[in-house]
Length: 198
Ligand SMILES: [Zn+2]
Ligand SMILES: [Zn+2]
Image (cartoon, rainbow, N blue to C red):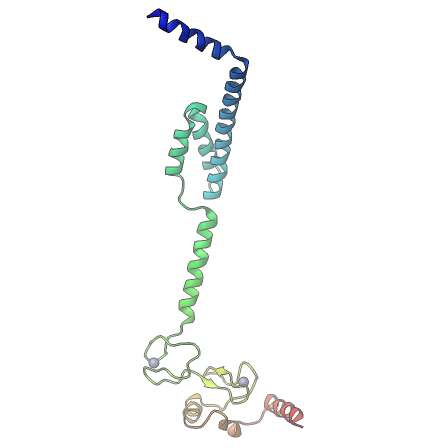
């Protein structure tokens, strides 16, 4: 029995006393220790990115350190399981996305009469025929029926939204320009238009 074991033992001793093997094993130990410390630093930074709590990153690093260079991979698994799921940046991004989604929903106006969803560019609610917008006779943009004047070009609308709306519905969009009382804005507009025509 010894006859078999002895050469193996001698070979093993020779292998371990080999300076190259010793150097390699030392390098491996140094590498593992660096990996251990680096992992602790990674856990620290990772926790910093996931919580505003100033103490928790130190706990994360301490967890890695506590498991020693031999067993710290178990601590990594543990940390990956218990760490907050989202980083602060992801939380921020998600809240931004939710906000923009909310803004999108709010931008979809509701018909003031039947509360049906209407497009902001529609003139009439297709459900209850309520007038939603009017076309400005001077700049052809959509104006709210409650506006006393066009917000885009400053043209004064006729007072009494309902009457104007009813007329605007029956008369082509280019016509109502005639019965609008002239103001500084429209006079200026007409002057400019005249200037461009001549
Ligand atoms: Zn409606
Ligand atoms: Zn206008």
